[in-house]
Each structure stands twice: as structure tokens, then as C-alpha cells.
Image 1 (cartoon, one colour):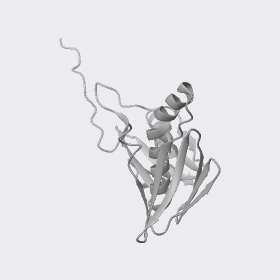
Image 2: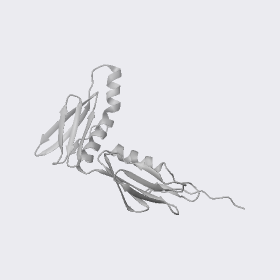
Image 3: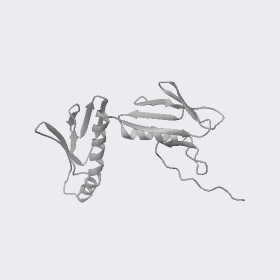
Image 4: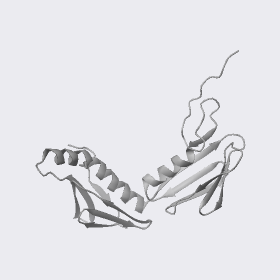
Length: 186
């Protein structure tokens, strides 16, 4: 039995849930997200003005499909919980630029310019569902309603110049600890 899959998902008051066949749509103040699922049952439970989503595996009696349903049970529960959190609160990720002359700035709403030690400035085209801010030249804040998309954009930007192990220069997540190596000794 999945410990994660058996937990109920609490739904805030400003979030609406639509269950149509094997598709779940979650709408909130930040936008809407939808997910197509299979091999699970999703039920909406309302009691005493509290709304919950219950996710259960769809057991058919066939060994192969029952195993697949049990494997994906906790994953689908987490995906639905991330959707509810995303449309009600949103997700954010912060990157810091460490190095002499490393800077980031917004050219416009759809393009981010990075100076990270190359001879040219790198341009990153921002997806339409993501919002990026640069409050300081060495800090990038990424916002969105889809947790996977926010983390993917942060990973793509970080991949331009990952922290190197000798001086620690590069683009890193805020709070990330980079273990530095000792250099050559004479």
C-alpha cells in the first residue's frame, strides 16, 4: 500500500475541480491545469465544508494492469497535489550568479540576457507560462503554476554555466552548496 497515494488532498476554497472521464482539470486564481490519468480512480469528497480528493488504484484483476496501477498511484496523487498548489499559490525558484562580471537582465518580457563569462551575451527565450524577474543583476527569480515547468526552466538556465568545482563560479540555485576541490600544490 502506498503511503503517499493513500493521503487525501485538501482543496482550498478558491480552487475548482472538474472530473470528466479520465481527465482532471484544476482551476484557481493563478490559472488552470489539467491531467489525463489512467489506472487510477479519482473521487471528490465533500464533508463539513471541507473538500478532499481521494486517489485510489484501479484494480481490474489482471496482474499486469494491477501492478501498473499500484506503481503509478502515488505519482498521480503527487501530480494532482502539485496542480492544486500551483493554481492556488504558485511555484518559484531562484538562481544566483556567482563570478566576476556575471550578470542577468531582462531585455523584455520574453527574453533574458545572461553574461556568464562567454565572449557573447547568452539569450534565453522565456516560455509563455513562466514569469522571470531580475531584482538584482546576480539574482534570477522564476515563477509559474506548473512545478515541473518552473524547475525545467531553472535547470535550462543553470545549464548555461554550471558551478565549477575549483572556484565555485557559475549559476547555482539559491541555497545550493557547491563543494570546492583543492587546487594544485607546488
